[in-house]
Amino acid sequence: RPAFSCPVPPRCARPTVARYSRASRMLLTLLPLIFAPTGVRSRPAAPTIAVILARTLFSGKYTPGSRTTAMAMTTATQFVKPVSGDALFSSIEKTNGSRPWGRVLDSGTGVHSLRWISSLVLADGSSVSDWSAVTADEAMRFSVQKEADRLGISDRGSVLIGNWQAAEGTPGSLCDGETYDTILADYLVGSVDGFAPYFQDKILGVLASHLSPGGRMYVVGLQPLPDKVQQGDDPMADVVCRVRAARDACILLAGNRCYREYPQDWIERRLKEADLRVVNSSRFPILYSHGAIVRQINVARSKLAFFRDKDLADSMGKTLDGLEEESREATASSPSGRLKLGFDYTIAAEAILDGDSKCSN
Image (tube, rainbow, N blue to C red; front, top):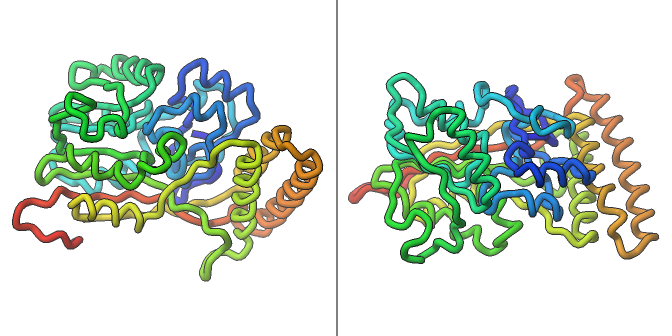
């Protein structure tokens, strides 16, 4: 995934483009789009028409945040990276320990998360009994199924087509009556915004209804950037906040919808409301290079032609030029050449057994 940021510790790049259909990738290549910041991985910062068309509904795979390295957009094949070294998935494996994976559900699948699941399936003494991967996009289903065939795990699981909002409380719908021992929600909640802006508060409860007693859900997300740097942050990183604000303003003025992630504490509250107990959480700091910041500025620039007011577009263009120069100076003044701000996170939550307390460990 192309990134707006680079992880601290180093992580494997997770290109979002690899999760899209061939036609969608062509659209992304033709349009001056760049993907948004996200910590260790990265996703499009804000969905534009092409991104919305390309992204799988609720797939969470338009990669924001965590397994991110600063990458410029190149060919789709160059975005295909191995899963090994992915700090977020490694953190999940460490938290899971010797606990059997059992039946595994990737609730918003993509090629990268499927590869991680394949590593669990193919491991010596694997405890994965079977797996299911959900996407709402037929092209994505085809890509993920093809990857499952290539990896040799098709006989152990299946790729399902459908979306969670339509499945809510509908008999005979997606995963109706099915329960899983492990559910992965990989950048899923934030990606809902482009399609069902008022469903985020329900998505984790819907998934929890498919969790076996004592089962575990792993949520991966990106902490939203603040409006300005907070106490303890690098003051020079304030330019990242202002670039984000300018980028989102341009996206809105062009008539598109911005991507929105949700804070770690918001996710934890929703998990508890779904009668899940949070048992572990981890954070992964994000480092922004000048190149990564400029890519976000270029996202904003790509929207100027769609402004109704040409004078406003010209004025915003000058503002973006100024921000690019500020970014160059700020990153140059940093010993590492990067600005530290924000984080990606993983959260582990368990279904509460009868007689158990809802309090976190």
